[in-house]
Amino acid sequence: MNLEQGQIWKKGDDYLRIVEWARLSIEYKIMKDPATREGTLHRVTKKEFCRLLKGAVLLVPEKLPDSEVNPEASPEIE
Image 1 (spheres, rainbow, N blue to C red):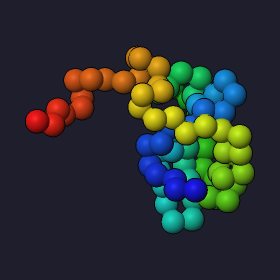
Image 2: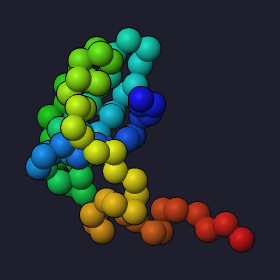
Image 3: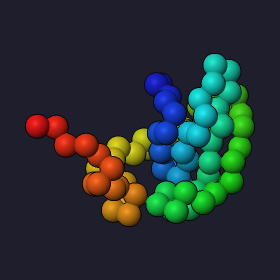
Image 4: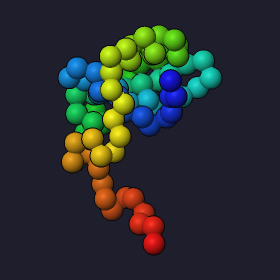
């Protein structure tokens, strides 16, 4: 499993966003709506985080709610 900072995972009704990826720990935020980015921060070991992700789905930008995707922020390639 490749974990990266900024990834958003959906598990049930909650969204988990990796806030800080470190060598031995993960700081993540549990949110109800990824567009607001409001939630609670938690710090766990990578092993604990991987167990938490069991059954979760990694969201790619195309699958995020419309309010999360900001077309003005992405540069266009010509």
